[in-house]
Length: 107
Image 1 (cartoon, helix red, strand yellow):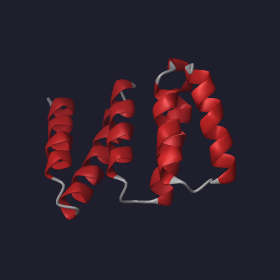
Image 2 (image 1 turned 60 degrees about the vertical axis):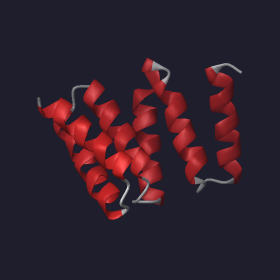
Image 3 (image 1 turned 180 degrees about the vertical axis):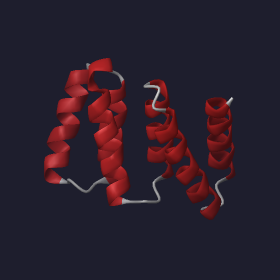
Image 4 (image 1 turned 120 degrees about the horizontal axis):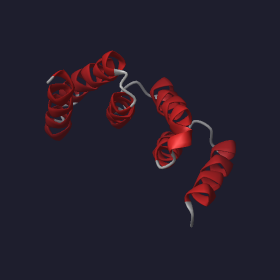
């Protein structure tokens, strides 16, 4: 299935279950595959965080996206929050990933 087909499918599923975290997150990931859809990806990941402030993968994806757009301070903000959430969840893999991402942006 092409990217646009997956996007259409996810949008259709979200019409039935708008608060589904995974569907919202998956749609954000699909938007990342199209440079013209970066603002849609940003909105989608922010929607995930609106639904669940502890969904640490969305913080990471937002940091990655904003960093790639040279919005460094915003990216660092999402990475920093994600790092704190990862520490609260005792998620060592995520702690390391956020730490590395912050290091790379600050370097």
